[in-house]
Image (cartoon, rainbow, N blue to C red; front, top):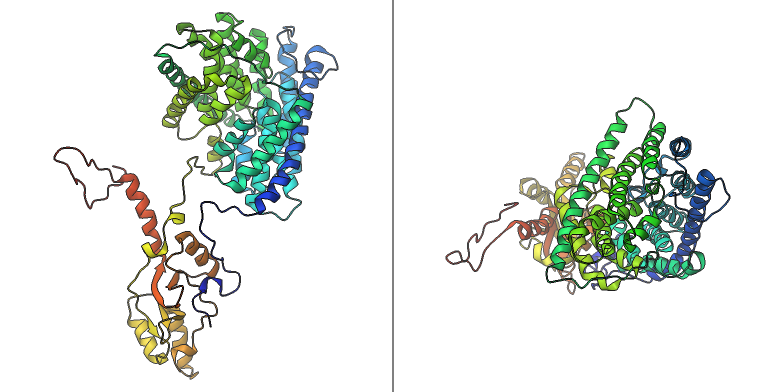
Length: 607
């Protein structure tokens, strides 16, 4: 009987993992291979989506059969300017009601929700209806980009592919996100930003098991992009000024302004969504109401309709007048909020780039350098602050323009916007929708303290035990009169052979009353199903053993002799959490005069 290897007893108990920096195994190579397929499929889906958007745009506004993305600047004003968005919105509302409600909105919250509570399983309906509905919504004038729809569609492609194989929910999540990152990369040519967006928004972890396959998916899309869409940055720009000493603080100030605008947009979006929710009509009609606002905005400024990539290029080139930029900022903001809050299908990245670029362009009138530079800074700040995903915003701006020299100004502005929004808002534009559905999302990553602490640091060392040779009657008396709920049973060498509880004592008492007999304690216990751990194990392993074995207490044994050296209880596990609370809340000043050692021995939570 091997009493020193207790974690392997009793069937399918968690085996002790060799401790190291990472938990990845060779499964990551399998997922990386599958990510190549996912990235290829997502790239093809991105091409289909942009083709459909171009086709619907040309058919609806110019009456021609063409798939090239076309600006709506030349669309003729008139009644059709309002009618076309409304017709498109009615089609989208019908598709959502009778197809799948998950195609409503910009898609990223739906992908996050599938990961968090859906086991990373997305339906074929979403994979088909999301690009179709988005193509109709954007092609008929919806003020959206294609990136949100392709993120959820690429994610659906990865999820569907994963469901053909025996994979865990975590592995399905990896392929879902690999598809999302590949789709974004295919459209924008931003593989690094796509991977960062995956980390900051979708994965809810930073582990090799997910990071490697997601990167493979994004790189695969980069390989396909020159074939499908052409090579080079989507919005080339490299006109950077020589900033004075106060240039970076000015970038930070612009970022703060964008942060406040971002916070205002987020609040306004959900206030309008609440307004739609109070209407006495079914939600399938809401997009049509929002489309009326879109059409009226198009009468004022047609360039505010559609994806608006031409507007982004003009903002960066500086070939715009201040009045036109201000008009686009106001009209685009209003129609985007109205359309998105109504529940139609479309993305957020391109509108945020336009709004941030216009705000940066206007504020840049007061700052040195070309207007296009400040438009670029505003784009990154608005994107990174609103999602909020600051690293994504910085790298996205660099990759989409090819302007590596702007890294420092972009970082200053985007982090400033990020700081403002996380202080202003409890939820972001992405997570507020999920929170309203009853789910809590945290966007802060940290090392699990249970992976850091060793069992020997928190276990109970002074353990009351029962001898295996003790007569059952004496054992029952000791258990019923004792102060503990459970007691380890040890043999003559001090090795645990079982764990008895008050419930066991009650059952045995009933049996003795029925003249079943008494005997010794050793005859009533067995170590066949006894799970034990060792002092050097990490606490997270003990948690796994507790869950697997259904034990609330674990004997801690010496790995060599198998002798009992301690007991780990659920109360002991709380010590790990208490250490984290102390680290967060116990504030001390060690070098202030006359205050050395102040607060010693006290724990202040939240103070």
